[in-house]
Length: 284
Image 1: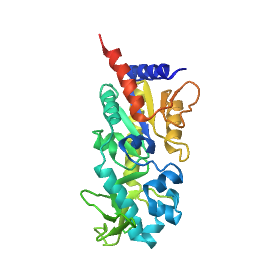
Image 2 (image 1 turned 180 degrees about the horizontal axis):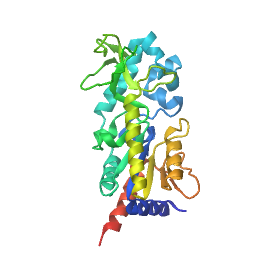
Image 3 (image 1 turned 135 degrees about the horizontal axis):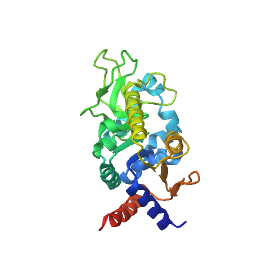
Image 4 (image 1 turned 120 degrees about the vertical axis):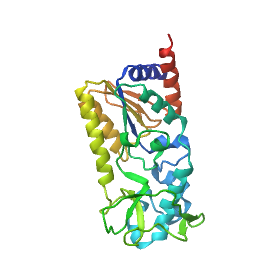
């Protein structure tokens, strides 16, 4: 099947669907200019000091650093916090939201991204599940309580040479100890998951309601790789148990189970072409 035919099939599925599930991995942010940390080379290009130390993303994204080298830890996460705050979500987000708003059953977003870009693009906070947490929310490193609070306007000053935090670092408002992002890290036993659990419950309720209403669902997956397959596995599971069609958009790993659509393209490229075809279908 040609790419044009794939786009047309995807457009038809979205056009006729009653509701949309959007699933997204780190590749979704690449067109916004965000690093996806795919492999050590991509990570080290974004964070040269980690390359000098030979640290991979998996090794860096670990609560160990908050316990042993807090300025180094907040250098990494503070840089990401500042980057995600200042980066504008690409126009693909706008297209997804536009399609979603036309559906009688609405939409739900399931993402492993911690950047908060779906909220920033105008998606309803109550229709988003951030399975790995959010960099825009903090918790205590101890933790002294199960409290999670919004980062708000807090920023972290970073030494661009060493990538270490300078000056004040975020602190827990309850005990005064060091705070950390409310993000699930590797080897993380202290992540407070109550916020993500609430999001999961809302998604489950939404899916139950869609089943009762016998809504035809379409799943649009963007930028979800196989190295950490949380999003891909969720997309395929939902497609299987909800009898939904999956549209997987991924420039390197577009392979899909039989009967679904895999498009080898970046998010903006694919969404623009699909949007053009949907617009044509809407013409009288």
